[in-house]
Image (cartoon, rainbow, N blue to C red; front, top):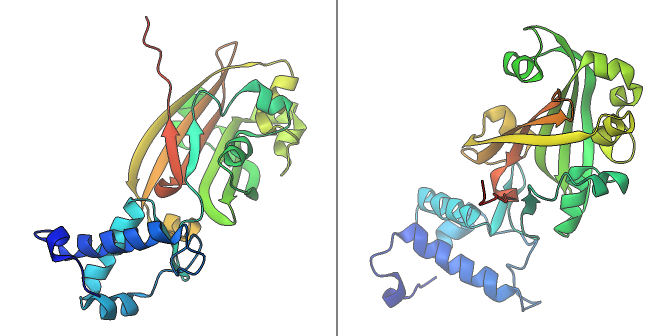
Length: 265
């Protein structure tokens, strides 16, 4: 497929291809007959190599660029597809509102619905484990202390986007039996904690970005070399006690993190 010499002069070939495919994706939004509409599969590597007369490595770099731009998503064993919906907008000032819990919505479900996606969750494990060293320190427990672990895999429109493991002190889990159930009820575990009279006061999040491991690539259907957001959150009640540490891995191209920071003292 010929590309514009004037537009592409001096640009690497993979960027030329990415620009061309980006334009086709944009133009397809208003054309029901177009091939690169949202949700449609992107041509295979072999097809793109033939179409643009380039090597496999060039095509792969072009696809990486499209994923970086948030235009396509790649799923292991299935191929690449034009993104159907924008990333989930995760707003620090909104996602843990008490009003969401009172309405029976856990944080992930509330934010996914706001983005227009259809959320779902699969519980992978609920049970007693030995707290990882960092988790024990955050919870103010001795190394090796027993805690309740709740591991979940979250989906947006049927696509896995986030895997999260919550760790809670075992004495808290014993005093609130629903915390040990796969489905803790409307509003999630935070609603159950507050029902006991322990109102949540503050959430503290630590955010890192790194490349996904092979295991994480498999869990979130990511391509090799794909980035993940590694987010660790502490939930603190009014007494100052941390009642949950949540270790979360998020597909980096599926989320936009938004934080409000007061400008005053």
